[in-house]
Length: 190
Image (cartoon, rainbow, N blue to C red; front, side, top):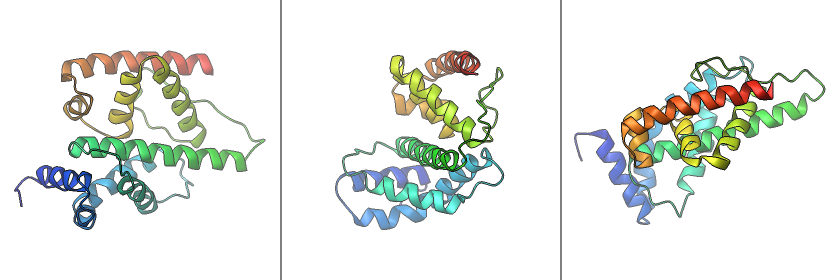
């Protein structure tokens, strides 16, 4: 075993990509705490009365992750980027269901200030942000993916650059542009 946990995760992911289903049993204990932190970070941004708990979100996401039979896992950053995407989808689906149950109540759109990093607190806001990201993805898939990895996945600039195959300088520049575009889009949709 390597002394670096990232190396162990990458090795196990490659084994899983190569069809070694035994790697699944070895992978969960190594990544569970990180997935739980990611889930807790997501849920901290949610409304106070949210019914989904971090453990449930981790378990749902993990089941979807290991069921990804056609993914060629590259490394730890790639795995956690996909995990972030899956958790985002699960939370948006949960938010849509919650809003469907509460139809007729006031629906507030997300009002972003200059800092896209501020917490998303209500399910309607999460849906509005998801809609804006989908719009961004129609004409700039890379920036939308970058926002997803950085904001939702909690990946560093360097990890995001690694997953997207660009330089950290490119990520910094695109991050500023994406935040500005999302700010404008969210203002227009209010």
